[in-house]
Length: 257
Length: 261
Ligand SMILES: Nc1ncnc2c1ncn2[C@@H]1O[C@H](COP(=O)(O)OP(=O)(O)OP(=O)(O)O)[C@@H](O)[C@H]1O
Ligand SMILES: [Mg+2]
Image (tube, rainbow over all chains, first blue to last red; front, side):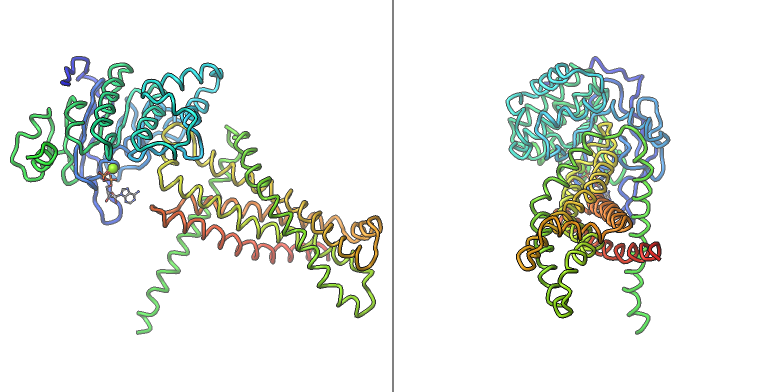
């Protein structure tokens, strides 16, 4: 499935990252990252394990603070917001965690209700149920509604995790390795889901992945995180049109050369 | 050589100081957030149920045994002076002033403290706390404040319950050996107790309950990555809260003594 990308508004960035660095002790993870995410775009971030991809989206959602640099999300400076404003902003950002992070003391239904009940306090019981069933249906897992997360497979948990973030109708989605550790068929389903979300809810998304098939099928644009910076940027074919020893192995491994 | 020997020691002291500063910040944050809406009433009630109700069987058993054993152990010494008629008064003072809150707190440190530590620890490690944070819920408020309030409310109630069960256990023993009737026993029990004794029970229980909650939450909330971190959080929650409960017991007894004088 090839993407057209006609719906992207390249004049309106929804996320702008400028010169962001982040270290943990002596470990310099990000060293001056510049990045834009445009309205309606699916941006894929590639990079080796431990290069700081998860750290990057945690910075964007304000879970971590940058050492230097600025991060602007939907026109607001993330590190300058107070608690309340940050919480408001986060409602517009969906964060799908690398290992799903479902609340394991709650059923699937309660997991999905949680953000709704707590952020839209005037919603009726019936409306909540309808919303929950809608998003569950969208990820194809309506039958798991009364199960506990521990009873689900990894792929199902991933999809529930995505559903839980979709329920607040975010403008921006951050997917942390949505297809990692899943079988090819489930991967294809998840890729389809990501594209569907983009079209149906008009979201702009950052998708972190090692999976080039995923990158190819969901990405409008791809950036590569190398040694703490974004070094390569472009379409799928542009990115891999190189002899760079840090880039080629990704391609060769994924497409078995 | 002596310098080298001191180095690990210095590191340890430094770590302890940092830990103390962190705990201080954590406690301050609790007091800042506890008065700010939204008040998580539903979650507080649910936690009271988890903390209080679910501890009842264990507390009943321990309280009862404490009452019986304390009475049976005290009897011979009083009998030496032919003063076994003082048993109810002695039991009453011992249980209400000291044993009830202490036994409750120690049991709760083990049962509730470790549970809170492990639960929050595993939520931290599996990024559930982060997930709450990014979905517009303040996890400190939802998880920590509600649990600390629940222990602070439940432990005093449980302490009164422990006292009642303990006094009843003691009664069975006194009734069997000294033939004291229910009426006479409880008349003597209540006669021996002052308001200050009841106040000291409440004060201790509130302080103990707060300690158990805050320590369990602190350990869980700051648990390091990995399953090992969760185990350590649960373990330290118990060790630290038991230790603090004893220290607080000593301090409160001093305060109450001063008030008595
Ligand atoms: N809170 C933290 N405290 C200390 N170090 C951290 C923290 N978060 C991340 N790191 C370190 O930062 C580095 C990058 O981590 P990150 O999780 O962003 O990697 P990643 O690119 O997402 O890798 P993967 O593909 O394996 O998920 C790692 O070495 C990690 O140990
Ligand atoms: Mg990661």
